[in-house]
Length: 130
Image (cartoon, rainbow, N blue to C red; front, side):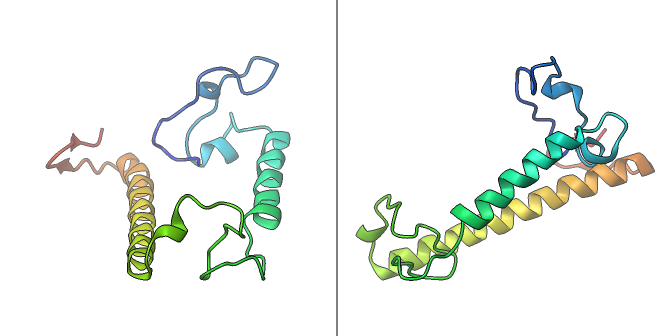
């Protein structure tokens, strides 16, 4: 995930000595002057494509219980032990956590764009953005 969170892994990203910190955050990592090389982006896109087409897909006839159940009869961390009410509750919790994560990322993206415009909010918990 390319965000403005500032999380960079330790070590080098390739054998020529480029560290993770040598690449900028956000869109600048893809479009900026110090962007990730094209070969690196191709590797990322190819990896995501393999995951989407080979691993994270709904295979008919493998015991999937609902839309988005990508276990495909393979992974079961105790899901079968829950009753229907608890399964529904856990699915609702997972959906709400996903929605909260999307709102968090949206907030980071908005802050990344409004701070350069001169807006410096005094937020109740974290104070100023800059």
